[in-house]
Image (cartoon, rainbow, N blue to C red; front, side, top):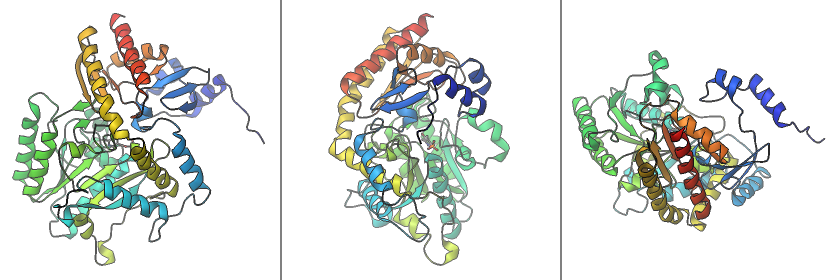
Length: 448
Ligand SMILES: *Cc1c(COP(=O)(O)O)cnc(C)c1O
């Protein structure tokens, strides 16, 4: 039976009656928004039900780093679903999970460093569903590690202002964006907030606070969590890798953990395979999601060092009682393996290295040429500017969004930050089209 096709209006009507959208003021949406109705996507483009194409400037919330429906990923998915769609990972296993784990470990920060002690190697992979739970399990691993390895008072985490680590209550607790925290305040656990290294005053000021907090109560700090080099949701705030290195040294000095949340920066986005590598740092726990499954499936992983893992060996009472229904899902694992293979075969990191300077130069030029556009910044395949004050809930970015839509560009802002995070393999001509479209949209919004 062929499924009944719905036209655009019918889809929107059903949607407005029943769908509750993420990060969306629903009253305004229902009354005033004429949403894109995406019927297909290929490469860097989305296609709307009215037949128009839109360049996807943010890789669909940062996940489609190889573009939409990369033929090799689709093929890997289809082949896997014909064999094994899902099975739990509780004490049993399957080839995609086992093979992907070994491949991730071989690529992880520090993997090539002969001198790195075995305990400090990221040698173990825990599978989860998304970035939030990749962080959630890292928090629990750290807390349980200390609880059962002689440091039970270590229950507090140090986190950066502006940090975004996801949506669960645990991940929200270690987050540093007041807009997302305040309403849940009474539910969140206590953390130590330090300034963002991207703030004025430089990373040294932020680091001094980290060091102070570590020295003040080394017996209580379970770990420091950070997004290395780029704080994404805070508005693409770029900071010096030297901060990450300094934090690594400071956590080592008191023997506590560094948790690197590379859910956004991992797999090339920030210019290296992992942003930790820009700082020459190997964390104790590394959270990966988004790019890991190339935007095809919700699939994620947390890598742990052999030392962290070893802290859970022994009797049943020492095991990590944590897991999701879809842990290590074979479809996600098969696609993630193919993602890594495509990175290798298509030299995706080399492509990033070639295109990143162009992104940087274009955003600098926009700030020079368009009135009201300030703070150009770029890192790898991320470029951003601010519209001068207003913060996350300001409406300025949305004027640019509207101007961009008219030009066939899907350019969702972060408050008054306008940014791009396109597919890493975006063809150079398409990248030029994107950069031109961003500038034109900024110009129109700034004039209006
Ligand atoms: C997106 C993001 C998360 C949350 O990931 P989800 O897959 O949306 O749950 C966590 N940390 C960072 C740095 C992110 O950018």
